[in-house]
Every structure is written in structure tokens, then in C-alpha cells.
Amino acid sequence: MNRRNTLKAIHLAGTIWFMVCMAYLLVLTLHQAGFNWWLIFSLSGHSILLLFLMVSLYLFAIFGATGKGQRIAVEHPLTSTGPYLAFYVSAPLLGIFAGAAAMTGETRIAQFFSGIALGTLAATFLTWVIVDPLASMLEMFAPAGREHRLQRLAADKHRREERQRERKELLSRLLAQQEQDRQRWQAILTPDAEKLTELLNTNRADFEQAERQAVDIGVHAWQIGGLDCMRRLRNMTLELYKERYRNLTIIDHISNWWDGIGSWRSPVAG
Image (cartoon, rainbow, N blue to C red; front, side, top):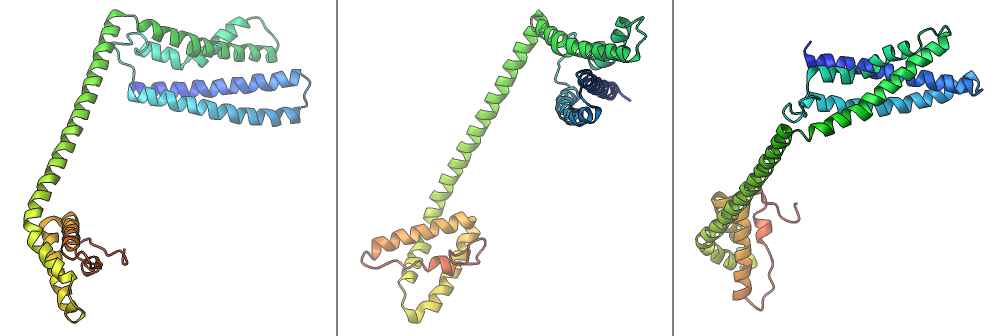
């Protein structure tokens, strides 16, 4: 078992012991206040559940931080060391010895266990709430750690700026490529747009033949540039139709003629 797994196991054992001590003190306090045992266990059951959820969230945060190695040795020369981490995670267990030492000579079992539970709470609170934040704060003022932190933050900022610059360059290249495609398609598709404009104005007798020709044109556009090229050709055709036949209503047969070509779908079918 490596050091990280060992620390996790110790931390889990210490947290379970911490919960047991909290439950014991809660039950003992309620009993001393005159509550009946059935009411005590009813109340303590809900309290233990709430405590378990809170400690589970805390364990998740601690295990995540320990597993990912968020503490950098240069910036945390004390709190990232093995002995300190062992001391930190075993604080509830060390509280057993502190409580037992404080209750030396006590012959009453209930009071002796109360002293151990209080020692566990005191040691845990002192270590997790006071000592560790204070040690971490003091480490921030160490010259080597402060310099390394500033360099790390500057490097992170530089990487973010580089990623942002790369995204902008990629977007610019995509926009330029799209503009080149539009210009290239404009020249290639102009004859097809002219032909489609005539097909849109065809009479009913020649409708089937017009549809076959329109399908061939749509397949050609799909082969050139896919769905975007087909959309471009359709828009060019409708604009040209408006210019050429100002007094005629546009009936967009193209969307139906091209249904099923590549990924093109007509409004009715889609």
C-alpha cells in the first residue's frame, strides 16, 4: 500500500472515530438532560445521519485534494510533507491519547469515555480548523514559496492567453476558409444557379424533367461542398429568380427536389 492509500485509510478510520465520539456525546448529553432513551435514539439517529452526510462531503473534498496532489512542495514545505499529512489525518485518533491522559485517575467509565470523546473533538478541531489553516497561511509568506507561486500564476496566465490566442487564430482561419469557399462556389455555381432559375419557372408539362435536372445539379453541389454548398446554391437561385421574374411568386421547389441528397431534407420531410 502506497503512502496516499495509507493516508486515506488512516483518515477514514479517524473520521469514523470522530463520528462515533460525536454520537456518544450527543446521546450522553441528552440522557443527562433527562430525555428518555427511546427519544434519545430517535433524535440521535437523525443527527448521526446529518453528521454522516456532512462528513462524507468533507471526506470527498479531502480525498480529492489528496489524490490530485494539489499541494506543491515548494509552496507548502511543511503541510505537503509525509509526517505532517500523517499528523493531519490521524488527529481524531491522537485525540484518544489526549483524552485518556486528561482523564488519568478517573474510575467512572462514562466519564472516562466522555473525556476521550472530548479529547477527540478538541484535537480534531484544533488540527483541522486552527493549526492547518494557520500553517498554510504562514507558508504563503515564505520567500521561495511566494516566488514559485507568482511564477506558477504567471505561467498559468500565459497558458490561458496562449489558448485564447490559438482559439482566435483558429476562428480566423475558419472564417477565412469559409470566405474562400464562398468565393470559389460563387464562380462554380453561377451556371447552376442560372439553370435552376429557369427550372423553377418551368411549366407543369415539363415538371418531371425539370426535377431530374435539378436533382443532378443538387448532387453536383453536394459533391463540391456538401450541405453548405447546396444551401449557397439554393440562396443564389432564389435571389436570381427575384431579380429576373419580379412579378412572379417564388415557389421553392428546390427544397423538395433535393430531399434525400446527402444530408439535405425538405421542410415537409424534416
